[in-house]
Image 1: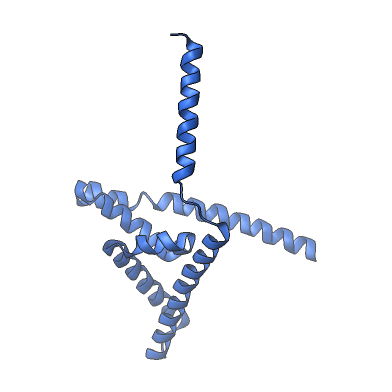
Image 2 (image 1 turned 45 degrees about the vertical axis):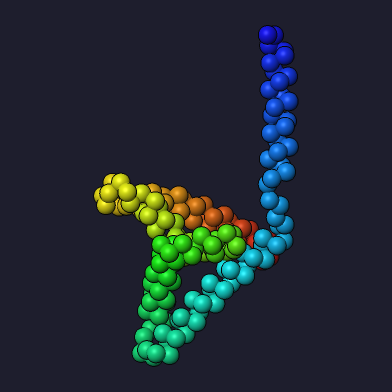
Length: 160
């Protein structure tokens, strides 16, 4: 067989495969995805605000910082429970990026990594894999907050 014949066969096979993938890939509209993410993210924030309000009303002597800390702990706990019970995946499937709010998304990422590797044991599985997520999340946070700071600085520079 000549090399030219082989390469033509590979190209035809790749074209057929590309057409097949394109045919079975679900199409999602960007506007619809953004609205779902906004709705899920907004609902999560609304629930967080409600939890904070309930804590403030129940314990009027608590400082604002303590109310925020308790609210964060409750949101993290609920996100971890939802991850373990499989609810968080359903929310993420529908809400997309809206389900990855900083605190609940981070709790989901850490707990899902821990659950995935629990069969490897408590130390080498759950405990070590739990923190594999921390590095990329911190780097992502630093990069985007730096970019936001630069943009804010430029806006302040040109509006004064």
